[in-house]
Length: 280
Image (cartoon, rainbow, N blue to C red):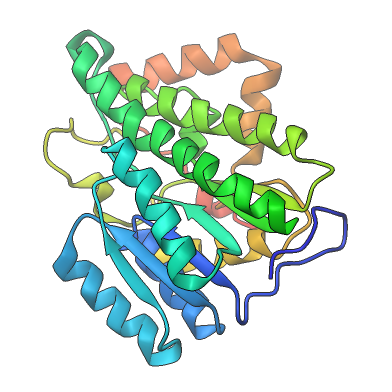
């Protein structure tokens, strides 16, 4: 069960009922399996039924009561409905992991309003709506956890990713403000900011080629970082550890912008954040 947000309290994974979005591949799939192996009852949610069924089968080897829901979270009414269906199916949710997201690598001058709205809907409005759906029930129980998987791009404005960064900045701000609002309740907020992870997000169609060409960590390593965040008493977590980059931007944003623009002109970013990696 998720404990009150106090220093030293951890989430007990074994027996917890956890809903993981974006669970048909990548980080979400690896996290769902990792949680099931630790004894959680896992709800997996994603668009692709065939791939989601494979993840569910793997979860059920360790956690037979795990279940799946097929939904496109771009439909906000459906996102809310599925969150409540999962709650009712499991009796309650100890934790909602908002992991689902879409990339958008496109220069600002090539963006249009419809694309921006779609990215914001999937990456920000859907997790916010799902949280708002289950929050009254968590507050009534006086316990629960919301884990928002954002991105380092939610703290650093990435070149060629204005729409994506905007959606992830929104999720970071939402997470911070709700953490303050819920500080004295039994509902805990955790924010996890992945760096470069080796998933299909780099190869999806309708995106420009990635500027980043450095190393990436595996979805399994990222999943372990999210589990660590769930069991931590800290609000924000970076996997791999890229906090120094964020702090450097905060202290001198003009230099960061100049450096990012130079990387854009060169057409590649080769910074190696993994060399700095320490477990969250």
